[in-house]
Image (cartoon, rainbow, N blue to C red; front, side, top):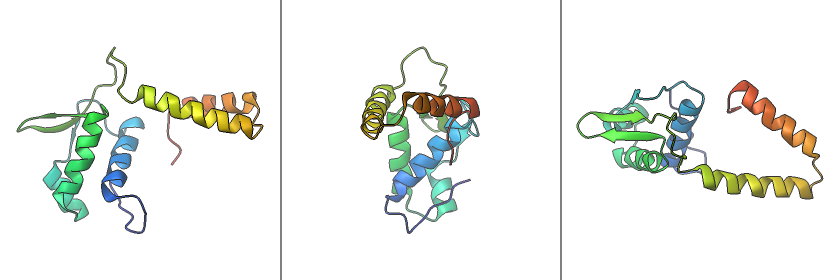
Amino acid sequence: MFQLDFKDRRPLHEQIKEQVKKLIITGVLQPDERIPSVRELAQMLTVNPNTIQRAYKDLEAEGFIYSIRAKGSFVANRDSTEPHPRREELMRELERNVAELMYLNEPVEQLLETIRAIYKKGGLNE
């Protein structure tokens, strides 16, 4: 389920966070599904539990998971009417990327086609 790349320059907690997000975004982990505890995942990956705790804390702050004391961590329900905490940040990032692609003379039709293709396949391409 999780695989760390110790040669990757990114910190381990970032790798874990990104892998959990990918599993959530692609639907492998469903809303309200319990995810491995900090201790369980630390043992599976043979890393310090603080590393897992940091990743889970970030995921909770970004709205991807929630915790219930003495029960564990669970995938957040994305059907909420509230805007996702990361939405504004991601939209600003998208603006910067589109502006750079415009500078590189990328046709708007190609950008729109790329977005449509991402939506059609349902998310990430990794």
